[in-house]
Length: 147
Image 1 (spheres, rainbow, N blue to C red):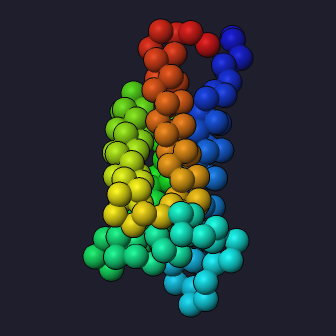
Image 2 (image 1 turned 90 degrees about the vertical axis):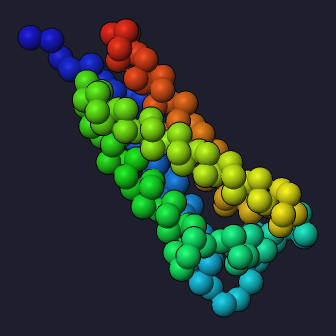
């Protein structure tokens, strides 16, 4: 009997999802915090409060950061499924692609409408981009049986 092959890429996705969860939780906290966020204010160009408290910081009454938090938890759960579970892997990739598109749209809003960037949001963008790339590589390796 062979020992199971480790799923390093699954663990990378898990770690990135945990980072995304932390970033989303901090962003939710800052969204509702009545006082300015000092550590995230670098003038007009980089100001998390300008972004996180703008009209674009929520969908209906739901903060965008809360959507991110739920999304990262979902991706974390999917990352812990077996690589051979093709439905879970397809859902992981599809969800990550949708989240990447949403995050890129929000970054566009930061750049072209708000004229200010949120460092926490950019960190989340980096996390979801990396999750998407790693999930695609993980699936490709599983299909080719390359470990």
